Length: 131
Image (cartoon, rainbow, N blue to C red; front, side, top):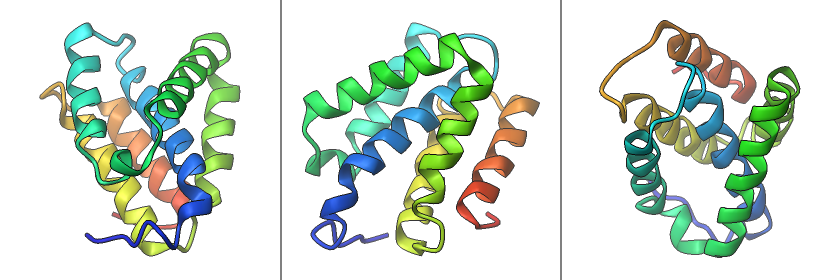
């Protein structure tokens, strides 16, 4: 899937936040985030096309912010994630990209938890797609 990142320049920061929020939404679904899971997911994200166009400092800050949100108020974190994701509703290339990243995060620990399936359906609903 090819995205013209120049066309989405104004959205790169929002995409970075979305990926960070998706990471914590999915990785907290099974109750904890192992160091191995965090390392694998970091590799997935850092290998993505978007990451090449981001400031690593910005992304690191987004990850810390998302972690803080998910650790302190889970329901508020879900609402925040939904709000950020809906910005891209109807933008097929970006929604496909975010779904692809989410799928890679889900399978990173080689286990599919029931809660992760539910979350994937929620993500699709938030983005207005049905993967």
